[in-house]
Amino acid sequence: MFTIGDLAETFDVSLRTLRFYEDKGLLAPFRDGTSRFYTEQDKARLALILKGKNLGFTLGEIRGMLAEQSFDRSEAEAAALKLDPEQIASQIGHLQRQREEIDGAIAELRAAHERLSASL
Image (cartoon, rainbow, N blue to C red; front, side):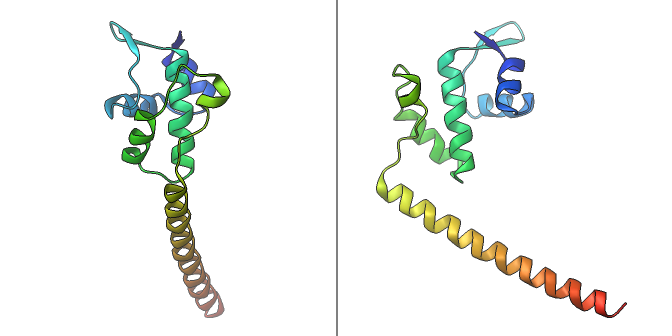
């Protein structure tokens, strides 16, 4: 069993983040009064939640992935999100569009910065 502090330190997340995931139904720690205790399965779920977030998936999408996940398998198997080729292709397209938008915003800000710096 792990405490909320143990998990927060292990995954370098805040206590608030873990409580948020609990509120959203993504984690369900054992509670003893106000204390929360997490199992190895909860630890594996959190690893997948964070991996999904790093890949840009929404919490709703991650919830669906977790519902299809088995946490009684080996640790290596449990560490991989279950993604189908269509999900992967869709997410790649989504992230590429985001990158293009960010690149455009950076270019616009650089141009504005250069104009303002030149006028000084």
